[in-house]
Length: 397
Ligand SMILES: Cc1ncc(COP(=O)(O)O)c(C=O)c1O
Image 1 (cartoon, rainbow, N blue to C red):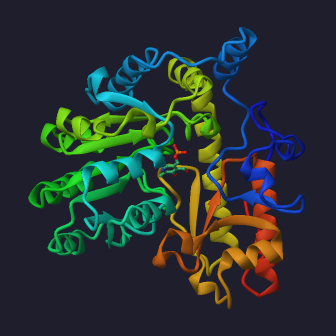
Image 2: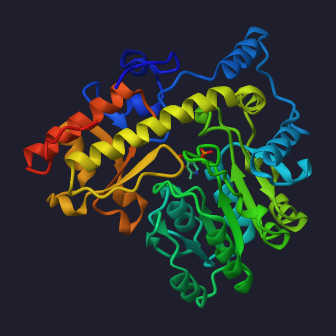
């Protein structure tokens, strides 16, 4: 593949970074694990951060209202997702995972059942365990577009009286973006069993096909009233280190319950994070569109590479996110594949078992990198599979 655009960073530039993705492993390893992208900052974000720093303006930021961000998010929700919300429903926090913990603590009692659809972004499992809530696991099952919700199993799980559904939509690690009909059926179950919903929609702006993201809370007012939607600019605009995320409270009652927490328990929002989020949502979309085109090309390249050369690896190309969830169970390795690929190919991947018991035998590959690095990652993995007789060495695209 060719290396066309200036937003792509070279391996040397990436190795000079201080963030986790490129420092956790040694210089011989290519990292495709944590969900950061290997792209240069969007120019409007960079300009806004530079300007703030040039003014030596890093004191306590204006918080209330969160410097125009609540209005900005409400405008974006209307324009991008046809989702009508009021700015006063929106509040800003440090990060989405923090919000999941705080929502579990304020909306449920100790020991309460929390529905989780596995395989799942690991903090979902950790937050429920660490807050003393009870995970009610509802594994996703094979469906027409990759993973699907097993509604009968979900209905059965609700008999145990869970209080809350922890939804990940679009879904990490599978990259599924649930269809309106699936969300509506989920909504029916939520109503019938009187559930609250925490909907983590942090990947909403990384839709890889023509479909638009559908916020769960946008389906109906009564479902919105049961839902806290969590999101941030951090995934789509690659600014996770700046720690700003937002929550949309679907009803005053949810907000009131949440507001019982003392302000300082929630933590602060970083000045630079708010500046970057504002720039991203005001002026970052042209950059995002370029990135999305690259992510689509990378997704398609990866899919055709896997199909051509690794017949034992099952993979449904993601509809959203920049994560590929590779089912290596039929490869016949005698160890977890992430361990095999790390040792044999020097590629660091997301470790399947971290995503729940049904993640055994899987790896998660982050393909948000330059075509050259993606090709190097796949070539390294291919050599390792060839060494155990599991690559066809057929020509790939
Ligand atoms: C589904 C999901 N939620 C939350 C996060 C992390 O969000 P934050 O850094 O705001 O805690 C990620 C990061 O990859 C994610 O994939």
